[in-house]
Image (tube, rainbow, N blue to C red):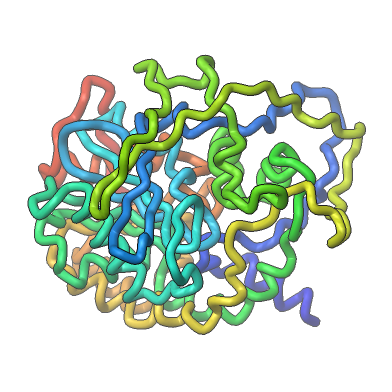
Length: 403
């Protein structure tokens, strides 16, 4: 009975934390002859020009941000629950090639390399304030025009942050695959979804392979750069991003590399420390590997960066009243969904009244921006150009809105 109920939820509802339902596919390697996939982790500098640690208060609360671009509107990217800013890596590269823009992807509280005095305080109010603080500390009192873009939990926080009206230059709001009605319904099953995930991985390669084979991230290239931001090392206790090497072959077309650390003061940003180059060899899997997490005695692998189960009491606050708040915000708005069945009644009426633009990209999973970053970038670029928020590049092509 329980399995049947979970299957119905899996087929119908969006998972509100950013984590997709468990896949029915086996972890075993598919049969047949084909090219072996590469699950080697990729350094963030392949997609971003710099990484900075932003100190926002006297308590030393810091937020890791990744940047790309130097002109045009500021795209503030907020990830889903359990993910990190690196989930936007491929999208960031794609969008900057289409339009003039600046990208600021933030590791939310309790995620990635961000560190606060209370990482489990994930209330909507606290996270919205975090976003406002980070933007103000990076860009001062007069930031460029801002477009907040959020996926799942991050989409809800983007709405809350916009509604605070503390960032007067906000000109656009883009929410990816989160709707109040279906999100609230799905909350009851989220604990089961979280418990179904492996609690431990032997290596980063194994974690990346699991994320692809389980369907959490359907794009292997995205998983290779984003998965380390979701894990911590048993040995160091630090986010696994620090263990991914930056090599010349992974630099961007512009040839950028991680910047050296500079002195830090309250309210300033410091650049990520340049990491020593090292060689990593992916572990050899048997012909048909099966995923079997090690015992609790194993202390040489990787675990999830954040235990989302401890924040369950805060989940409803992310989504309660989300639809009405979204509709009331007086800026250009786009709702990008992985399926038309995500819409609730209030948003359906609002969409029919033309209160926001909507686009559906059905051939992808819940991590829309990771699965099909090129398509998401095309939709976002068209939305921004149509609303005269930026100028297109030579590579830009118009995408007709779905509705």
